[in-house]
View 1 (cartoon, helix red, strand yellow):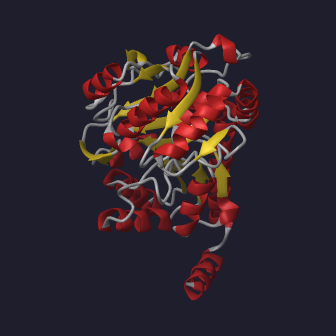
View 2 (tube, rainbow, N blue to C red):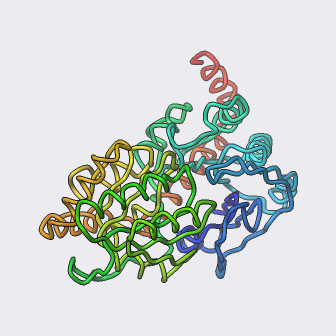
Length: 385
């Protein structure tokens, strides 16, 4: 099976999954990237072992980490690749062009979307709504990262029995063992862009409240962003012991999580929130807002963390309880590792492979039918609309 994946850019957390998918396809995976680096990203990505073609085109930043791509060259790239099946990963003009080509060439395609209804600021825009309808209408199967994402794709019209799971996976292997409570020097961790929509002001308020409640607090902050200087000034003025690491990735990030007792993730909007998975696999309990796709799935209320509305006193009380009760911390830590034990590059690649195989299988059945049977199928399909 020759498969072509069309993607905005190859993100570091996709590499191991795509390498394994290439193996499952006996080398038959080709990747078309809309750009080498999306606006606002700092990732350094090695695509060793992958067949990647990067297109020229236009990318329009939409905020909240989302980008709209337009690459007319996707049509010529698909003609060169001649795939048996295509995987599309969003609702942009580039994906719409690719879906139109696939339909005209009678190439089945699957949809892989990471977001959900509450995690995509574009969801209500007329353009996004029309692109969604157009692209989804011809899809043979869908690939979901979790329950919210699965439900969202089903709401577009994709049948539930043709949905497959492919979880988002950290860019590094989870540790075989993790430090205990007493071996972690930092109480509170921030990991992500220091931006308003990620809840950085809420985090600073939380840190100040915790210091007042506990008398001492050590904080580690990983990431850059427009509110970095403001954040540092506030925390240092409050007398909080804080370490700023700037942007980190890869193995360095794993070490960050292993140094911390609690991750606070008060995002106001997030398609998924891979930091929650990264933290849980490293035995870090998580406080998370319900506005992240991972809330309720990777972080389960009262099991390996807390899922709380953005209410300052509630977060401070929950954080204080976890930080000041080592037994509770240990229970949450072990539960997080157990919850995320099945999230792996292998599982993610297998989900993608199964979706691609299902789409190709359906296309093969279509091609084996006679013209008379196909006319009857089209007639019946029209009558069911």
